Length: 212
Image (cartoon, rainbow, N blue to C red; front, top):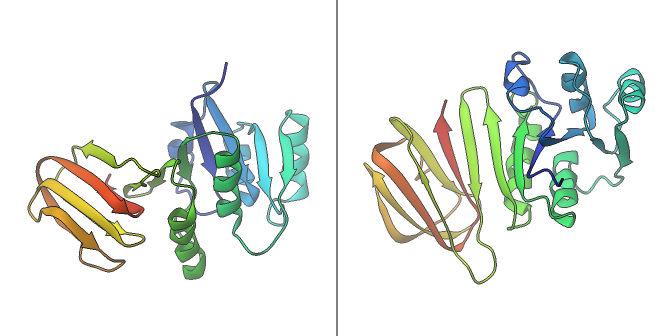
C-alpha cells in the first residue's frame, strides 16, 4: 500500500531522538537526507531511502543502511542543497505530504538555505518543518487554485511571505484582507484571538510559524 506521508530527516541538530521517534513507523516513508542518516541510526530505525550527494553520511552508517535494506540514491550536483534535491525527488514521485526534522542549529548559511529550499520547492508539496520550539507550515498555491488552512495556535505565531503573496488572515490580533506581503518582518509575532484562518490568493509560498 502506498504510504501517505514522507519524513525527511536532515543533518541538522536534534536535541534528542524523541522528536524523531514520534514520526517513524511502518506507515511513514522515511528518507535520510545525506548526513541525517546518523539520526536514524541513533534510534535504530532504518530509512527506506538515503538521498543526496552522500558526502556527509559516514561509510559505517551507509553500510548499516544497506544491510537494513535501504535504497541509496546518489543525487549529484552542487547547484542545490541536499534538502532541495529531496523536495524535487518527492515531487517527481508524487509524494505530496512531507514532514521534515533535523533542520535546527548549525551554520547560519545552512539555516538560510533551508528556507530558500522551501521557497523554491514545487507548489504541490505540503511541507511542515518540525522544530525544537514548534513547527513551520509552508502554504503554496497550485496553478489556478488557491490554498487555505485553519490552525488553532495558542498565543503568538508568525506569518511570512517567502515570495510576494496576496494573503488573508483572520482570527488574529493583526488581520489581513487580501493584502500583498513581501519577504520581510511584517508578520513577526502576531497573536491569535481564536482559530486562525490563512488564505493564500496569489503568489507565495508563505510560511506560518507556530510555537510548540
